[in-house]
Amino acid sequence: MSTPSRYWREVPQRYRLEANKCEKCNKKFFPPRLICPECGNRELVKTKIAEKGKIISHTIIRVPPSQYKDQAPYAVGVVEMDDGVNVMGQIVDCDFEDLEVGMRVKIEFRKLFSQGHSGILCYGYKFVPDS
Amino acid sequence: MRDVAVIGIGMTKWGELWEKSLRDIYVETALLAIDDAGVDHIDSMYVGSMSSGIFVGQEHIASLLADYLGCAPVPSTRVETACASGGLALRLGFMEVASGMSDIVLVSGVEKMTDVGGDKATYALGTAADQEYECYHGITFPGLYALMAVAHMNKYGTTREQLAEVAVKNHRNGSKNPLAQFPFEVTVEDVINSVKIADPLRILDCSPITDGAAAAIICPVEMAKKLNKPVVKVIGSGHATDAIAISQRKDMTWLEATYRAGKSAYEMAQKKPKDIDVFEVHDCFTIAELCVMEALGIVEKGKSGEAVEKGRTAIDGDMPVNPSGGLKSKGHPVRATGIAQAVEIVKQLSGESEERQVKGARIGLTQNMGGSGASTVVHIFEKE
Picture (cartoon, rainbow over the protein chains, first blue to last red):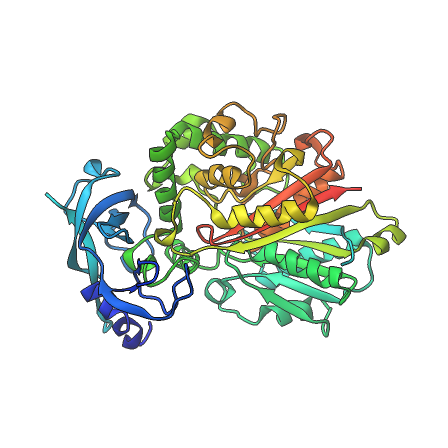
């Protein structure tokens, strides 16, 4: 198990959806980067990602990794947010058979998993249908 | 740059090798390659291996394996680019021989995966994906390739049956490979009714957990000729990277690193996809073989499913892919795979592949890929 610093360091992204943006090529990065891979600009400005978008691919995890052992099956997708940023996350509050490419979703703050006895509870974002 | 040849190959039966340790598997295989080459020493060695720390709790294996192979104090280097580690070991060895730094180099890969349970193995393999922005959300490797499959099906109309045809072909080929972990045939029905892993992928779409190693000896072509060896030359080598998180890529159905590595290798070899007689590619999942065929320019974008369905990639097809059985049937001890692909191509070009021989094969290509495609190494070989 890692020290809490590894978790704490990602809090701005996981809790507040912080991203950054290259003002030269207008491209947004989530998670934030130190250099724009498109133009090499290092002066990136802080911003947030859009909170709604559409599913561009999805799957249902039946055989999970150790930290999700008790949660399978669950759906994971890649969502293209309305500002063009692609984000991976679980898709919840939705029947598996209703999942489809193009479906509108919004981001919500949820618990993801716990690190077990005396470990921390890990939070972050998940997607839910936007109806 | 000096021309480089492969003069010895080694591979043992792959599978769940409960009675053998990582070092035993490795040494047994490396000795086969050394004996096959007929050399009395090596100048340097490269070992592809990624997760020995998680799988067997052992890091620092380059020196460990040099010692147990009886080769210490030769320089030994461990190479890690996830599942492309074996291919990269070959590329670094190739560069060392081509540059004149060393003459006889052992290039190899090994993985001992069955000393941990399934969820730990799934976790270990997952470390090749973005830990904070992919694995954190519960994705797995079958899950990442499932996302590619759904995107490919949605964009090009690729069908569930076409994915299954990849497994059917590779198992048919693997049933003729005595070293394969699962040398038996499967049908489309078997595949599409097998246990679900990450929808739409089922267990028969996935390569297995395997213990195994593969090794090869390379040297300058001039030296190979003096040793009176049949000369299989390495005529092209390419290596490229991409974003490791698939959400960061422009198109989830397109393997840019494979395209780039392929382009470099084709240019160095002065060959085109149509000049290649036989391909060994990284079919860690059925969808991977389809995406790789497109990125290597074997077929147009979106046409891979159809090509497999029509039998064009079978051993007797016009573009044979994975005559060894591929990762699917032969097994996938992750970092040994890239070397095992080279072993199969050397056998094919030497006419030693018996029942799975591609007739008249003279030029072959290997494509070895790490993670969900963020590292790729491509090599092209030619029989002189």
